[in-house]
Amino acid sequence: MPLLLVMSQLRHIAAERDTAQRREARISGLVWNGSDSPMKRYSAFAVVREALRWHSGWERAWKSPEPKRYYDVIIIGAGGHGLATAYYLGRNFGITNVAVLEKGWLGGGNTGRNTTIIRSNYLQDPSAAIYEKARALYEDLSQELNYNVMFSPRGVMMLAQTHHEMRGYQRTAHANALQGVKTEWISPQRVKELVPIINIDGPRYPVLGALWQERGGTARHDAVAWGYARACSGMGIDIIQKCEVTAIRTENGKVTGVDTTKGAIDCNKLGIVVAGHSGVLANMAGFRLPIESVALQALVSEPIKPCMDVVVMANTVHGYMSQSDKGEMVIGGGADGFNNYTQRGSFHHIEETVRALIETFPMLSRLKMLRQWGGIVDMTGDRSPILSKTPVENIFINCGWGTGGFKSIPGSGWGFAELMATGQSSLCAAFSLDRFKEGRFIDESVAAGVAH
Amino acid sequence: MLILHCPYCGVDADETELAPGGEAHLKRAGPDSSDEEFHDYLFARENPRGVHFERWRHAAGCGKWFHAARDTATLEVFGTYPAQTTEPPREIRARISVRRPGWTWREFS
Ligand SMILES: Cc1cc2nc3c(=O)[nH]c(=O)nc-3n(C[C@H](O)[C@H](O)[C@H](O)COP(=O)(O)OP(=O)(O)OC[C@H]3O[C@@H](n4cnc5c(N)ncnc54)[C@H](O)[C@@H]3O)c2cc1C
Ligand SMILES: [Zn+2]
Image 1 (cartoon, rainbow over the protein chains, first blue to last red):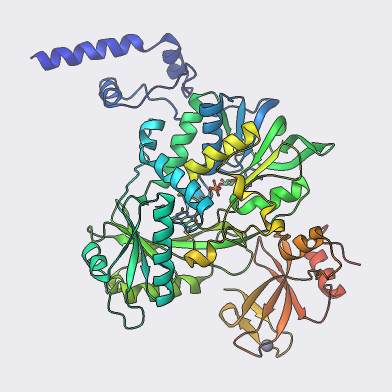
Image 2 (tube, protein in one colour):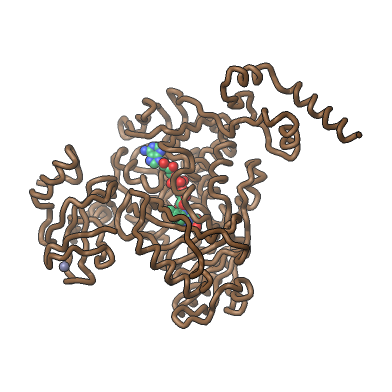
C-alpha cells in the first residue's frame, strides 16, 4: 500500500513541524495566532497536511494585536479600501509600521454589504483609468493574496431601455475603445441570447441594446476584505478591530495622532477611509466635505437553480441583478434621497426596484425574497470619489465611492498608497478635493444614470 | 417610512409624498463672495451623524417647501417649521436640547 506509506510519512513530517511553542499554545488553551510569521500559505498541500493532523495547524488568518503607541501610518476604517491601502503601502513602498483601526469588525461596513458588481466601463478618462486598474488587479488577486476572492468575470451588461440611454452607452463604448477598456454595444437579440430569462419586448421598458463588458463580473465581498487583511497581517501590519477613532489630534495644522476607544495613538500620516462616516471624521479634523451620507439597500431571493450567468444592470428602472454561487438572485436598487446613518433604507425603494425588475424579468414574480439590508454610502455631487490631501497636513482622505466602490478596491488602494507614501499619484490626481472649487468635475452621474 | 408634518396644510405626510431638498439654512453666496464662500455654499455640507436640519417639499400635497429637524442616527423627528426663516425657531431648538443635551450644529444667533 504505497499510498498509505506516503500518508504516514507525511503525517510524521507534519508532526515534527509542530513546534513546541504551538503545542504549548494548544495545551494552555490559547489561540495560536501565527506569530512565527511569515504567514503559512494556503495550498492543496496545506489542506492535505492539515487533514492528516486533525486540522490542528491552521493559523488565525490575521492577528489581533493591541495598538502600539506610535505608527508611521494610521488608516481609519478596515473596509476594502482601507485594507487595500495598507496592503499596497507595504507591498509597493515597504511601509509596514502601519495600523488599520476599525470601530466594528473588518469588512462590516459597505464592503460586506454590497452587491459585488465589478466593471470599468466608465465614461470619463480618470474614472476608466482607476476602475480598469482595479479590474485588472482583480484578475489575479486570488494568486496575489494567496486567498480565494472568487473573482468571477462572467460579464456585465448595462441595459439601454430608453433612446437617451442607448445614445449614452454607445458614446461610452466609443470612449472605452479610446481608453483601451474592452466593451461593446450589443443588440437586443444578443442580450436575449446571453440572458434567456429576460423580456426584451417591453412594453414599458423595451430593451434597445446593451453596453457589454465581457471581463466584468463579481467577486466574494468578504473574501476581498479578509484576503487583504490576512496579507497585511502577514507583512506585520496591525489590524485593530473594535477600536473607534473618537478624535483627531493636530498641532500647527499637522496631524499628530488619534484618540480611540483603545487609547491615544500617535502617527506621522493619517488616512481616513470610512465611506459613510467620512463627514464625521472630517468634522473631527476640522473641515467639511462635499459629501452626503444616505442609505442604499440590497436584497436576495431564495436560492434557485442557475438561471442567469451574467450581471445585468437596468439603470432606467434603478435595478440590477446577478445570481450568487449559492443560487440567490442578488438585487440592488436606488439610494434614499435624505441623510441617514441607520443602515436601514426606506421600504418603498425595495418595492419600486422589484416592481420595475419584474417587468424585465417576469420569472422574478414567483420568487420569495429572503433578506434585505442597507449600507451608508458617501455621495459626492459628481458621483466620483475623492482621493486627496486635505486642509490638514499629512491627513489624506479616500471616500466618495458612494454606491459603486467595491469594484475599485484594488485600484484605489494602489493609488491611495502611492499618494500617501510619495505625496502624488497619477491615478488619484484628478480626484482631488479642490476639483469642486475649480469646477473640474468628473461627471459620472449623467454618464451612468446610477453608479454601481 | 419617514413621516413629516407639513406645517402649511397640516397633513402628516408619508415620505413617498415628499421630495427631499437637502441641507437647510445655507447662506447663499452673492456676487461679491470669495471662491471659498462659493465653494462652501455649493458643496461643503454638515452631513452630521445626529441632529440635522433639512429642506423638504410637500410634492404630492400642497407643493410647498418647509424645514424639518431630524436625527440622522435614529430617524427621530424633532419638528417641522415653515421655510420663511434663516434659522430654526427657538421652540424647535429647545425641543432638541431636551432630547439631545449639548447638541451642536452651526452657530445660530
Ligand atoms: C447595498 C449596497 C450595494 C452596493 N453595490 C455595489 C456594487 O455592486 N458594486 C460596487 O462596486 N460597489 C457597490 N457598493 C458600494 C461599495 O460597497 C462601497 O463603495 C465600498 O464597499 C466602500 O468601501 P470602503 O472600504 O470605503 O468602506 P466600508 O467598507 O464601509 O468601510 C469603512 C469602515 O470604516 C469604519 N469606521 C467608520 N467610522 C470609524 C471610526 N470613527 N473609527 C474606526 N473605524 C470607523 C466602518 O466601521 C467601516 O468598517 C454598494 C453599496 C451598498 C451599500
Ligand atoms: Zn402640505
